[in-house]
Length: 299
Image (cartoon, rainbow, N blue to C red; front, side, top):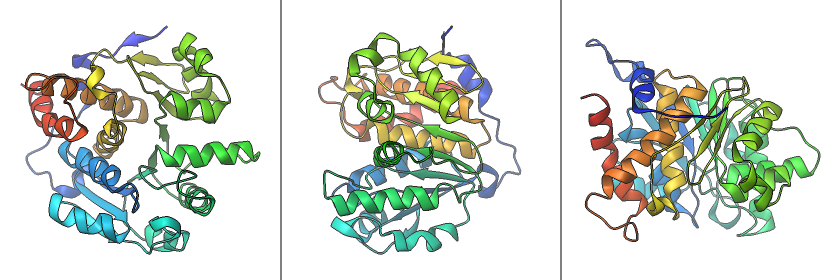
């Protein structure tokens, strides 16, 4: 039976910061994200991770994204990548990405896919196939990384998995592509379906939407009570992936990080609504409100 995520659960899950802490104490995260078509996705994910407490955030992306990050996110480390099809990250960058010192990996936001070209979709699939299984730590797979995985599953290939634990963060459309289920079937049993595939994929599944569902392979299921319709727009999922990444980097297990991430995103959107109408809310307003949300958690 699904239970609601509570503020107390989130507060107790995040470890306190010792006085002698240093940046390495809170993890080193690598976000492989963005392309010429989707520059903002990478920036929102990286900012979500920075705002939520990751020690070191490295953004690996192509030059248009890297240039934007220099201006918007001076706290972010950068790993410039060679461009491939339609201005995306070329698979030849995999050896460079493997050399980055990261404890947690985010793969997917804004990488591009079939909406750009068949060649872009092929290169994104190659990135997922080569980078994710070779990663030693925990990972978050989102957005175009999920769409690439759906194509791999359709070809009869196994679900890609890092050596550590995995969190997947599909919205209903991505979940439908991953599972072959209809939107109606998903809507009728969100918690049950999330749990079924969490077990099948050996991954924590974050099925996004109103009352986001978080399901673990060990049978735990939670629903998130925070958030509002202002989150129903592009960029919100990128912020969520960055927040979840930061929670992992600070020592939470995948289920705890996913629950804390979903709760923090929704609570930050609710906080932003104190000043904005839900029609006006943008993803960057949510990242700006994360600071107030985290402050309230630790009051």
